[in-house]
Image (tube, rainbow, N blue to C red; front, side):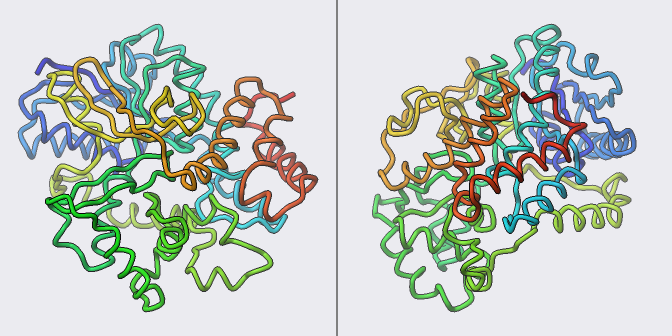
Length: 437
């Protein structure tokens, strides 16, 4: 392998930087590549640099770990760019929860769909527009690895509007099969089973799951799921098991996410559903507080030579190896739907198997989804496509329309309430948003 430069936006996300760059350090210990770190938080940036330097030294890696305060210098001549930014931080996340709550609209994560996902996209896109301009000037051949939510809206915008070579990468596909088989006490099939997964980000579907001899495992999975639904075996995952029972297939993303992408579970008129399905309302703000507390308690271990690392299940280092060395790998990536899933809209963002080689990301044809799954996906795609169009045009009316079409919001609020809620969000996020007409 030749040396390369991997630039990391949002490197103050120290644990995630550890996974992505730590994987490269272990996978390519003899390659003197550069890990170029950039973050607007100088303290967290230095903590990440120190931690990754310790990992490199501990495992004998020849890479150079560099923390940059100049974004352009960090980008210059990069071969790969990892995007892990969060525009507005915890303060904006709270706004995305508290204003909808005033209208009776409750959320769990609010980073992918719904009003929370829409406004996260609107405040992230102007930053991506700046970055895209710099990429075209200083590293036009770089591959952009987007890990930022709302994945589908942002990845579509990066590829279609900003014309940056991009693949969106998520964590949910890698653990979908193992978590399902573990939950139904069928762990013995994990090492050898074959599966097929496709759909959209956070709503991709386990379309097929077979043992090594080609026998369909779904009938036994569904039988055990039904038998154990109310026996506290799936307390943190009841929504996904319910969707599998009603629509026939297991969905990749967690139950707390799934509950807010659909109109069925978080309902003012059925408050008992929150308890029945164990839905963790306001989960993301709690998680932010918890993670910050844990980081402060543990960071002395993670930024000293006591830190350890083993290769994670993130796709980034495999993509680097394939693109640099030509070793073919298979990932699940978020790309534009150019005939890959014919019963989803053309040029929406889909999550499908992709082969990676020296030529980059090569998405695989999937074929039509079962119609009920495509129908569920389309309700989310409507919001994603309109939000991307609204951001490109800086058009407030299109933002309202995207929110009107959100499955959860439209099931709970009138259009007048949705519009008023959006206006409050525009006002509250004013410093992070450009002018919308």
